[in-house]
Structure formats: C-alpha cells, structure tokens
Image (cartoon, rainbow, N blue to C red; front, side, top):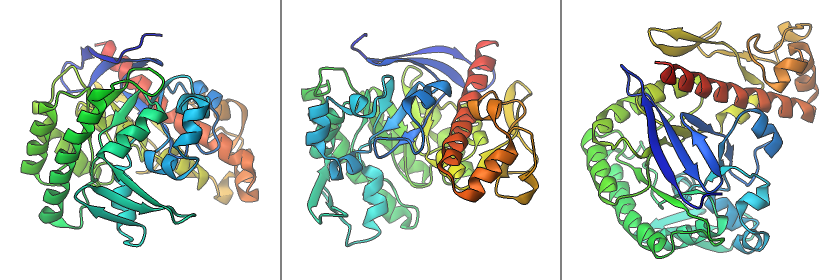
Length: 384
C-alpha cells in the first residue's frame, strides 16, 4: 500500500478533450474515466462489496458526511476503524461534505437553517441539532477516512437566480479556505492514511460566476476539482455547456469530477467527451429498483462512442407484460452476472412479486453497464 494520492495524465483523445488518467490512492489504483456507485448510508442498496468488484468498480462514493453524523455517528465509525472497514470495501473511496444536504434540506426550514458559518440540521429521529460547517465537515471526513474528501460547500440552487448563485458562491469560497486550513493541519485520515482534498466549482448557470469560481478554486492548489450545483447532472445540455466554459482554465494533471452525473449511460459518454474523469449518481441502482434496466449497444461512431437503444431512453421497463415469457437476457451483449444467468421472464416475475432477489440482480446489471461504458471509453482513447 502506497500512502499517497497521485494523479497522472496517461493519454488524451486526438480530437476530443476526453482523456485517461491514472489515480493512485492508499487503497489502490483507479483508471479513469470511472463511475462511482453511491453508498450514501454506508452501503449500496442490495449490493455487496463482492458484487461491486464483479462489475469492475474501482472507486465508490461511500458514507455521506451528513448521514454518517446522524447515524451511526462518528464514535461508532472511528471505533470500527473507518468507513472502509465499516463497509467492508477495500478499494478507493470518495465521500462528500454534506453540502448537497444543505441545499435539499434547507428547502424545509424546519429541518435545516443556513447561516454564514454553515448549516444547522435537526436530527430526523432524535431532534438533536447538528452543526455542519467547514471545520466539523472536515473533522467528520477525517474519521470517515475516505481517500478523497470534499471541501464544505453550498450546492447552488437554480430557482434563486443570480442572487442565490452569488450568495452560494461567496459562502462556498469562504468555506473552502477554512476547509483547506483544517485539512492542511492534518492531511491524513484519523487512521494515518493520506487524504486528497477536492474543491467544488459553483456559480449556477452563469458563465462569469463559473469562471470566477474556477479561478478561485485553482488558486487554492487542491488535489482535484469538483464541478457542482443543482444543474450539474440534472440538465445535461447545460452541464456540458458549463464544462466547455471552464475547461480551458483547468490543469491537465488534476482529476475533474462532475457531481451527480450518471442518470443514463450516455451522460457518462457526454461528459467524458468534454474532459471529465470521474462521476457519481444514485440513478443506476434507483432505476433498477423501480424496474428500469439499461438496454442498448455501445457503438463506435466517428472516433467516439454512443449508447444506442430501441428508444431515446435506452432502457426496458421490466414490469411490462411483454417480458413475462421473454427468455432473452436484459442485454444480449452484456456479460454481467445477471445477464449471464437469468432471463427477462425471470426478472419480470421477481419484480411483479416484489422479491428481494430482483433488486439485487437488477442493480448488478445497471452498475455493470455504467462500468462497461467507462471501460469502452478508456479502450478507445488508449487505442488511438
């Protein structure tokens, strides 16, 4: 085990900003582009660490800071020896600062109140007040022990317009400086392992604010760069436009992370074509649980890739009666455990009966497809 964080550019696509990076953490090596399955509450719904390995996942988002503060609490995680041991996940891990919960929970003033110092949450079960700010977020992430930690930020809402974007930008920048001061005093986790600190570019849908934020983030000399805000991943056309705005400012040697991208396989292809390295999203497992299974073909076209299916969404809805006697796998060209062993008819039956085996098998497939897309992108770049 090498107790360091490093990122190196391996190769660029000859005509696109797409690239392959090698990222090394104390828990292993990750080749990008890489999709990070999300274990917000210290587990991926219906998937074990062994399941994740079979999908070729090398890094996950594990243990959201806000949720881990609520339960089981930092005392439990620290006593066990950190999130890797707690989850039984031996490979690389990123965690988030709780900044997104500042956005989502503050929409209900009784659950979260934001001030200039941070956010005041009310524990959803006990009612205990939790103060999450630049100091407490980094301190908690030290105990969580992820390889990559995020500076505390305010995820920019879209509905507030420029005024809300400016307010979130100002807080994010001030909180980043404080986060970095806390991290620099002790750059390792509570268990002695090197942690990389990423800052988060905010600014909403305003080009000048995104460029201003990018300049500020780069001045802090961080280990990597996150691109956040409510619009990222939600509006993919705007997401790609924002990346185009700021990419000329970004250094080649640092990992670029679009937060919350991955609703569809094509979303990964689109942001990698713009120069992004890593991404996370809850959608693949959430879609699986609700009966939506990724279905299509990864097709090479004009030196790049596209994910093509029978409809615009490249999916099948397994609850439909047409699958009740369908003896085909979900995807003919998929080598995931589910597609190699089970038919659409069986998955349809499991889903209609509400049996837990469905959620397990469906989640394996959707995560595998996302990782298969990442592998194809790495392969095409390296082959050129």
